Length: 278
Image 1 (tube, rainbow, N blue to C red):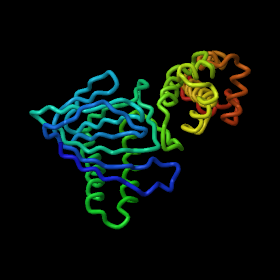
Image 2: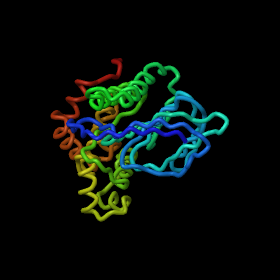
Image 3: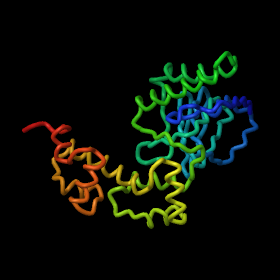
Image 4: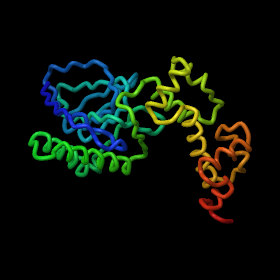
């Protein structure tokens, strides 16, 4: 397999940005070593030519020209090329970012034909910068990555979190996504630690280091976020919204909402109401 990897050695000075670790250009040449692996960082795979399959966890996904695969940290994956139409692709290794993809998946695949020119600009520019290595090329590549991430989030329905640590814990990452999907249920710290297969105190420490907030604080933030959506977009009563978002009582919900949003749920609804008036 033809493979050229360009590492980046300059640390990002902005703690609120993802960091570009490397750019790789690969081309299948009948010597593909297809073994599932994972990293503590995210990866972007942009297919320039060819066809093949992407193996992620227990799923097999067909890929071809102008497809972009984005994979979260600590997710097992590998790629397999068709020998008749060999894959050529660019890989970006990106540290310090975790994506929240639709349906709580740990990856997503974009069929980019409609946005081909825009995406090709970023990937081609990155390859050009790292091969020519002109003055401040690493800084240019970092900025290209940041704009690319924003553009992708505009094209597609996902959000992302910048995380303050260089190495994400696989168990904590899985629990974060579990909370995203099950915030309305009766979740406790003991239950979450058991799901992570970690000692409770070590779990809290690891989760907080990875995401900048404790697991219970993150759970509460997700519940309030969901409540805001229900307040502005439905006619459910405040008591019903408290129940639907997992709070044990309306009074506790009101207390948490006021603390996090700086106003009551009723005031928030009046300011953000989106339902048509009858």
